[in-house]
Length: 242
Ligand code: SF4
Ligand code: SF4
Ligand code: SF4
Image (cartoon, rainbow, N blue to C red):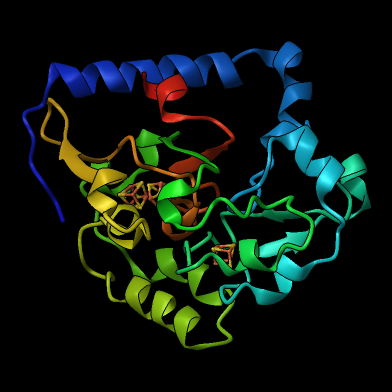
């Protein structure tokens, strides 16, 4: 799915805008640090209301967790203060695969997951961001190795859907890395992410307007430790790249 584009003032400008946003978000040192630990930054399931409304509405029943076929939802423990018992997604462990009919939303009895959100195009969980371009295998011109994907192969593998994810990831060993773009579960993934070249001919994933912040790209990024591409929960394309 590699698509060559004119390297572009447009993408340079977008890249720059994202970097500026990121600098403002993460470069603020001690002043900004408390905000990073605030509830606002948690990645919530599809359809989650705005954070304060979500906290006031969620009855902590765990129904969404029970029905998720990808096992990406978990209830937060007591260390998360007022968010204890509410569902969240650790995208590095397992992203949300935007299932047909969003069973998590359908299962939610309280409306904390908005029943008006009925398919992937309605979802707004956050936005993806290439936080560490210096570690991105595509930018480095390196192929995917077995060692690089081995942590991913330990992710939940309890049914056919999960097995298919891990099998697909495994098929990239020895190939150039386009995992984030190719695994994107958005119905028309090229509207959310695509591989493009910068002015020096290096490939990188370009995040596009339809990205919903599902976290799959972060899960499957084969860099060791923190992913090169991460989700900024609750943020929007307009705010980060606009
Ligand atoms: S859409 Fe599917 S994968 Fe995503 S949280 Fe809901 S049930 Fe889980
Ligand atoms: S999955 Fe990670 S390493 Fe691979 S192209 Fe995407 S950001 Fe780069
Ligand atoms: S680009 Fe990443 S976060 Fe955005 S929709 Fe695709 S996989 Fe999900």
